[in-house]
Amino acid sequence: MTTNVLAASRVTTRQFYGWAAVFGSAFCFYLATLIIRWSHSTVDIETSFFVFSRFLLGFIVVCLSMAWNKQRLQPRRYHYLLGRTIANTVAVFCFYKAVAVSSVAEANILNMTYPLFVALFSWLFLKKQRDGIAVAIVMIALVGVWMVLSPGSVGLGFHNFWGLASGFCAAFAIIYLNISRQYHDSQTILFFMFGVGLLIMLFFFRHQLFIPDRSEFFFLFTCSVAGVLGQYLLTYGFFFVTAVEGAVISSTRILLAALLGPILAADPALSVVGWFGALLIFGSNVGLALRRKSQAH
Image 1: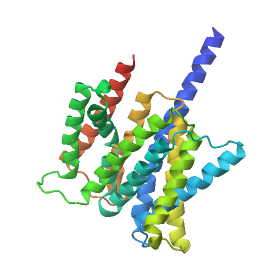
Image 2: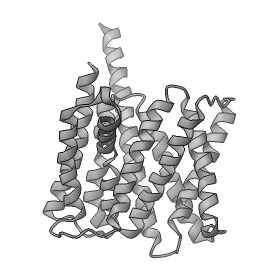
Image 3: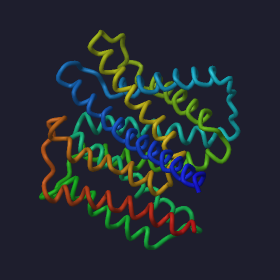
Image 4: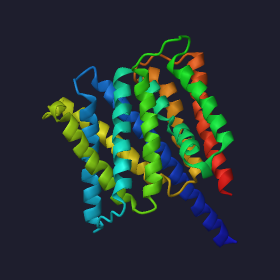
């Protein structure tokens, strides 16, 4: 009896750590965007430099971790690794660009549309995984996207689509990640994601990189720490929570952005229509997660 109680207690503790880690990752990703927004009043740093710095720090951390654990790279399917890397690099760039040209709340809410695009791509390209109910959920969520993008107006500004593009590209990154995990360990995937992503940013945006002064370095470094820590917390957390729990907790970034944007980022508060749209996106993410769980059993 005592053994069973202790075992249940350990499971509960592990779940709590998992929940805390996944929620911490959502907050870290949101914090990274806040730091970008706060930097605008002090320094002039291009979006590409923030992305480059995040990949540089991530690459250093992965290399040190692999050296400490004496772990070797074990790449098998390079096209999956490259697909994951390119999609993730574009997604992060679009996400950070959305923060620079729109509101922090809009950028985070629209970035969290990636589960919807994953469901839509599965319908289009994977005949065996076609699910009419999931597509119906996506259609409802798209109404929510429209409410967030253009509440009370007909026209849409081009800047609004950076956030949507980040969700679109993140969906491809997730699909490639799921496939790549069948052949590679996490460290190998992260090594390529950060390392090759770093080279991509250096090749296309080297003219926007420079030696930062103290203030510039502070914003670049803290934003990078938040982004990389969020990545590792998410990876750690998913070892101890179910996919449904992880999806629901990760989606709380939608609510964090809507609630804290006006307070921490001086964003305009979401209108009633915008709030309803954010809740539709959040609810759709939860619905898709529950749908995947029911299909797995």
